[in-house]
Length: 444
Length: 48
Image (tube, rainbow over all chains, first blue to last red; front, side, top):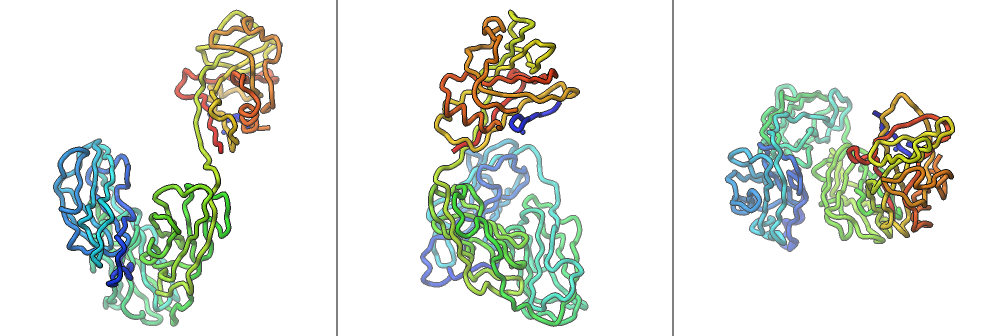
């Protein structure tokens, strides 16, 4: 069968924090959860996580302030831990199949300055019918395997194929060594990227080996299938070149930006993922979450932007490259959203039929229909869609989708509006269809 | 002219249009599923 389109025809945690200062009176924010709000088909063996916009007071995050319950029922039992700005609830038994759950973080949680959440934060997700047994993988690293002439002040990072359980990112889960000697440093985690920052510059012209251990698991407890090991060799210099914002979306000065757009900032080099967050990437009057991957930070607003509104986005000097060199200055750009939001709809026919000149008294309203002009005989196929709600609208695009079931035959045909009165019981004779019953422009 | 223009013309000019007519001049038959078949045909429209 062939689907034809008619038209042109057939269609992390070194973050922050300034917030630790005594002057901080800003409530902490929630930047992401796993599962996401309204997510469906969650794994039965998943843990539930909530990531905050700043470091929190770990002593306030416990089974009293982080609960998970089947919708309308009592909370289930589980363990709660906190690290890398992320609270993790690990159920003591697998979740029920095909069940809606509510996860709640209460105002009992506090940031390190003692500020509480503005209000309880709750989100809903639904389980599927299976457990997740797929192990996480390391999908990319910086430096790359066998890289040479690496800056001696670099950090080392690895990106996973999925979110991992922060409680499993321990000191010995990510190591760097040369000649049998381990390098001392700190580990951070953000999004799906874990970063090791050596305490001191690496030695010049030296080969180092990084190891990600199998102790790191995903949120369902699946560990890496095997240790991930890679090596690189340093050069003789430090990287002191400040990164720059290379491009943005929307571009500076852009107009008519869709209200559901995702904002991106692409950097001139690989950045420390733990510094490319919503603490350093901000949009005026907007709250959202930031994910960093492959030189690009993507800002996803929690809600659609407002119509016909100017916004200013900023990447602050808190964003640093892997050598710890920050942007030389904040990067700011502005854009304006569309005055009217584009809407999309899919219409199904309210009626359809065909009439044939060679069966002039027969009705074909309940059959599949054909389009032809055969041996001087005529067939008109009639399809009605109710477009009355679209009067006065500007049509951005339209696509008529038909399902063809005689794939051995190719042809083109035309489509126009018709003003004749018809119904699914109409016949050639009842329509008096001995004339072209169409008006307006034609699609050929 | 493409289907977008036809739909725009439809909503701009007609209050009595009763649908679309499909026809051809090349003499070849093409068979399509009617609306009795699962959700086809259908019309996707994006508009402001």
